[in-house]
Amino acid sequence: MEENTSPRRIRRPDRYDRVSTLEVEDQAHTTTSTESELRTLFHDLNVQMQSACHVIDWDRIFMTALATISLVLVVFAFFPYLQTQIATDQEFQHLFVLKSLTISEFQAAPDRVTGKCDVRFNISNLGERSIYHETSVMSVFLDHELLWVSRTGDFFISVGDYMLFNVTINTTAISVPASFVPTALMESRSLHKPLLFKIKYDGMVREGLAAWYEENTHVYVVCGWVEMRFINETTIRGGPANCTLENS
Image (cartoon, rainbow, N blue to C red; front, side, top):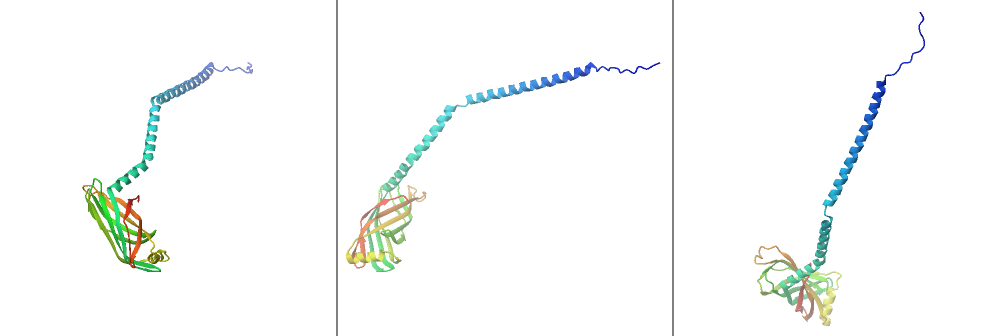
C-alpha cells in the first residue's frame, strides 16, 4: 500500500483573525474615547476660565488702583506744605528775641581769644500750651567761626507768659589757630569797625498741660546777624536782633 506523500494544505482557523480584528477595534475605540474626553476636559477648562474672567470686576480694580495712586500723589504734593505749617506753628508758639550780646574781659592773641559772654533773650509763649525747655545748648559765632558753646538752664513758660532768659559763659580762652578771628577783633577795636555775630539755640521742648511727661520735640533757633562794636578796650556789645526758628 503506497503512502500519499503529496503536501497537504493546512487551513488556519478563522477565530485567530477575528480575535486580531477585535483587538484592533478595541484599541481604536479606546483612542477615540480618550480624545473625546480630552476635548471635553479642555472645553470645560476654557469655559471655567472665561467665567472667572467675567466674574472679576476689572473696572473696580482699575478705579481702586487709580484712587490709590491719586491719594499717594496728593500726600506727596502737600507734604512740604505740612512741614512748613508745622514749623510756622512752632515759631508762633516760641517767640525768641535777642536783647543783647556782650563779650567782656576781651583779650586777643595770634592763635587764641579770651572773653566772657553774656546773652539775654526775651522768650514768649504765644501758643495755647505751656512749654518746658530742657537739654539746650547755645553757640556763639563770629561770622561762621564757632567761638563759645555752653549748656543752658531748663525753664518753664506758661501760656501767654514771657521771661527774660540769661545765659553766661564764664571767661574762657578759645584756641583759633590759623583763623581770621584775632585779626578781625583787633582791627574792629582799633578802627571802630562793626563785627557780625550769630547765636544758635539748640534744645528740646515739651508742650501741653502735662509738659513734664510729654514726649519732647526739637527746637532750633538762630539769632542774627548781630552787629557788635567795642564800647571800650575790653568789651564788645550788640543787639537787639530778631530770631527765627529753622528746620534742624
